[in-house]
Length: 100
Image (cartoon, rainbow, N blue to C red; front, side, top):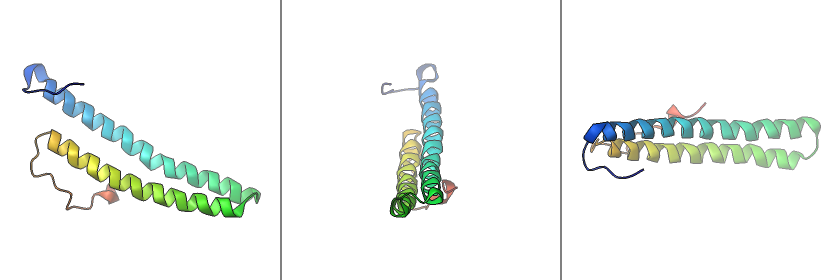
């Protein structure tokens, strides 16, 4: 995708829609990934195979969740800037939107 100087033929609006769609997809993946790691940890814990690995995976899920929230906060910030919202700031803690 390229850079657009003006809104000829709705290209700016199309880019806004692409950014919104990508943010939606990224959010879904970053929410589901830690859950998948936690499910794997639960299976390992339930089978008694490697309790230490299960514990590491639970911590990894927490780390991935925190990192994902940080990433999504910045992604939303830059998407707002790209849409022309010059008041977009990262002062607000938007991470609670992504915790599930």
